[in-house]
Image: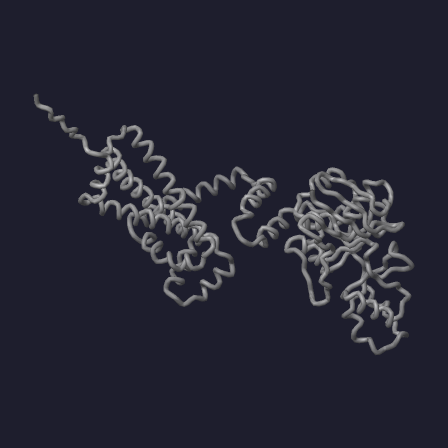
Length: 444
């Protein structure tokens, strides 16, 4: 009897895979896949780098004397053609990558005797992941952090596609279709709502290591919805001069306060008669106390508490004034507002050489703060990193953290009295008969 067992002719899948990897022209196809994916990644990075350059970086690029810098500046002169070229090149490379890589993977998996439908499913998942991570996310993140370097490095390669047919031909119809869409959008009056912009800003907040751009754009977005009352200096904190004061007393007040302009009142702040500017008085410092400085009092500019600060900004520019007296609903003076207060809503706090380095609060630890009662609610929200919706739902007219507590208590609260708003605990540290001066805040 022949005891010899028949030999299975089917090859070992692992042997087949190893044999396939180093077989003939497949190695060159594999090299082509790597090169094409790398080129696609570079063009993805170029897309982000070219269109996220800041004005400062653009200016530096203009001043650059290198050939690459000049080419980059030339490309940026026609942004629509530039974008069309990058998209055409990137999609051409992506298609080439899919074709070559799909050929290799299909050949490999079929050699391993896998089901054809399963092979195609694996191809789709694998190639999609390669394109998303290797061809999009990683290069775009890297390019955003090194924009100027990326632009200079890629300018020549982008320019080759920009001038080489058939890629240079394709960018023309794409540019025209873009113009057509723009004209249709204008006719339809397509607008982006503030809520949509707010969402876009929130989603893009983590795109940069710095929050400065986000803060400024967020300030611009809120600009038209902010009332004067929310940013004014309340009358309790206003420094002014009485109209019957001597020149020496007026100058002394200016020096102590560190301001360049101050309101002038008669008897009390409810009767503001005008504004005095320090530079008007400087030439007459040697004239003594008999000098009539009242002749330099300028006419006051009054605004209501509910005036929007975007309108106030326009008024400041048109009237060429920098300070306004804020009036309450009864016609009494409730505070003052300056051009600096308005601008700070966009760019953040503006400090000069005369400003004391005081933040209005002290952070004790990661969850505990001590605030001055006069700190505005908007500054309070920013300091502890909250949106303030819980506070806004509860408050009526209060604009400071101390005023909010008084409003909730219905009276001037006692020291150590506590109030809870959501997960935030407010404790009165110091208070007198008129107001709450110090508040301890614990974020739970």
